[in-house]
Image (cartoon, rainbow, N blue to C red; front, top):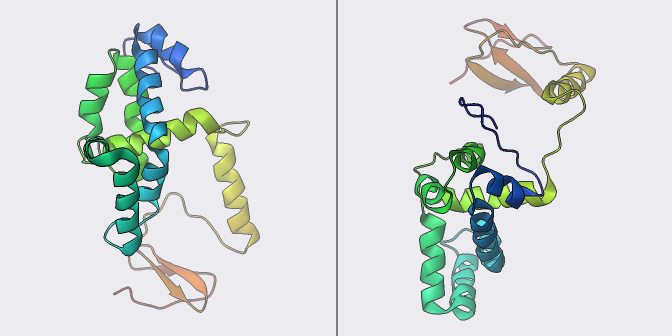
Length: 193
């Protein structure tokens, strides 16, 4: 990530040192936050995989109460609902650290001021740092080209410069409406309703 003033930060397995390069103490702040999150990971990942208003959600809540007691469970719920914008401001001193983390919230369709965005941000960034984020040789366009070749090999076609208004399934094929003109491998004269 590069800011307009020319400063940079890179997310990598050695993130603590990179964050400390940006501002003294930011690496320790990251380590502290992730250690706290890791201690609650069974409950955290359980919450991601359960419908909270179900029997499974009730059991998860009971497990949280038994393992973290009342104060710990309330602290977990508070941190899980915190908007990321406030957390980033509070946890990190450098603009580079905040800018490095902030865009990842959007990958889940949330904004930095949404309740729960800190929780999602911690899930995503801890996974990225631990597992990495592979980029194909040749850049992201290589992945797009590989996916496009799969579509073409299957008899499909791509229209990157057109805007579709609707996609409809007819006879096991996708029919796409390009502003009133239908296109599909098999002629499709369907209406999208």
